[in-house]
Length: 73
Image (cartoon, rainbow, N blue to C red):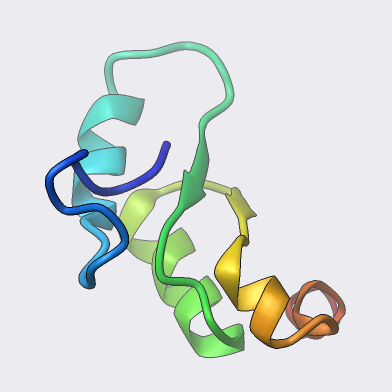
């Protein structure tokens, strides 16, 4: 789930709390996305969204090793 509306586009912030609300209504795995730029924002996203899994986009473009950094933490 991309934590923004079409109107928001890619502008911060990502509304990770919306993902948590969506997650409570579904029984399928939910993957959180939006404004994940470093290990700290990945951990915060997981905490706020309640998701165990995240997807990184532009953060991985700006730091190609980001997924490994998150996994290693």
